[in-house]
Image (tube, rainbow, N blue to C red; front, top):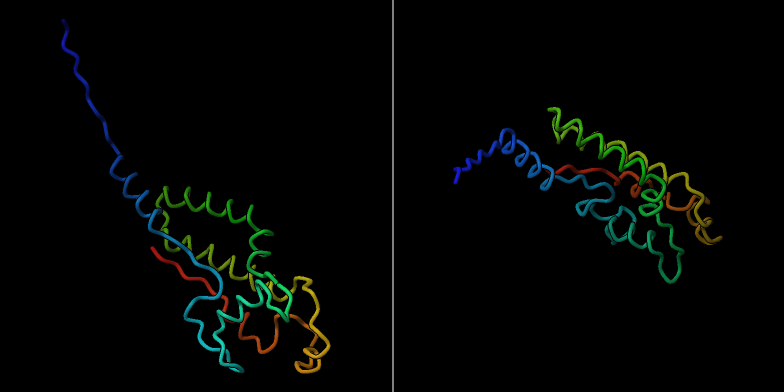
Length: 151
């Protein structure tokens, strides 16, 4: 019987595994971060105010600026992620690529919060705020939207 010799060529395998590990441990978080702090005009945290607006309360309607933004841009986010994979496999820096995605999507989320046709404020709220614009009062909520890259 002839001896069979098997050679394993793992050329580049270690590089691919290292790259896969980088992607597995990487993330970009976009939105109101947990360290956004307390709202200027109340005792509530900015994160809590974002949650109350996103899902609504007994007295205020849901204005889901986070979910609406994702629904509007999901396809583009997927395209960005595909380009990131291609660029990083060709040598681009993963942190920089995720930061580009974060910066782009942060702008989209702020734009959604500011300009989406949300359910109008109640008359009492308009009188108190002197504005009919939902989700914009002091500007602290929209200015708290930011991205954070972890690699």
